[in-house]
Image (cartoon, rainbow, N blue to C red; front, side, top):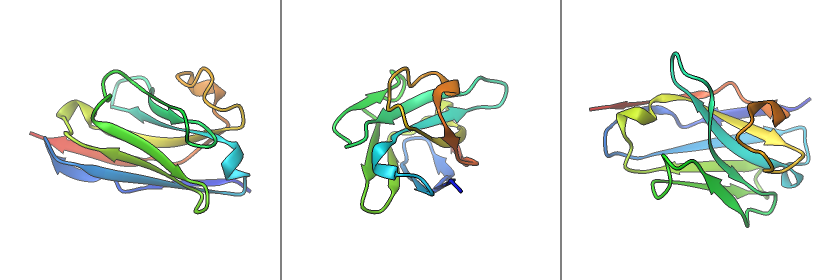
Length: 125
């Protein structure tokens, strides 16, 4: 049984930082593309970032480039999202997703095979 679990969310002031983690079990972690999505109240789920199987290719939404960094540790089945210079617009539930098809068309939520339950990030002024 596949299990995907996010952690690390919380309340932070604008300009601050947070580090999100995602662990996945029950799947060949190193063979899966991994991504972070977020969804704010009343808005559609949007892709934030994606990382390839080996971690050698990464993609970011324009809104988070230069502020967020995605990484993975295949020895620990862990995905990380380092978030710096946080803004109130970053407030959302953040989700981890895994796909056996890598990062192709990563912005499409329907392509992702497995999802976590999410971790809330709230950025105050």
